[in-house]
Length: 79
Image 1: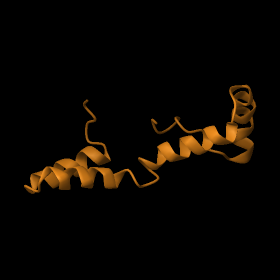
Image 2: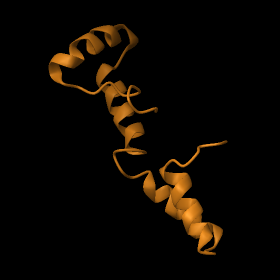
Image 3: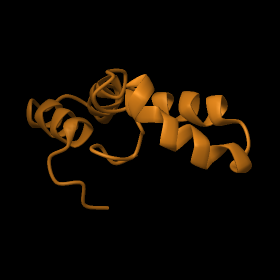
């Protein structure tokens, strides 16, 4: 898959360019997924879905989100 230069791809490519082994490159890429601005978004998505609980509650949760200043994951950052 082509992921352009997102954080994991960039980190892996830079690490590999130093002639480090494949394990170091993959570890470097995985490390970028810990932050809340990239991989952490997946974790926040799961928290949001856990809060909503059932499909019949989704619309109300979404409509009330702005008043709560809640983030709606998947908008502004692809999940």
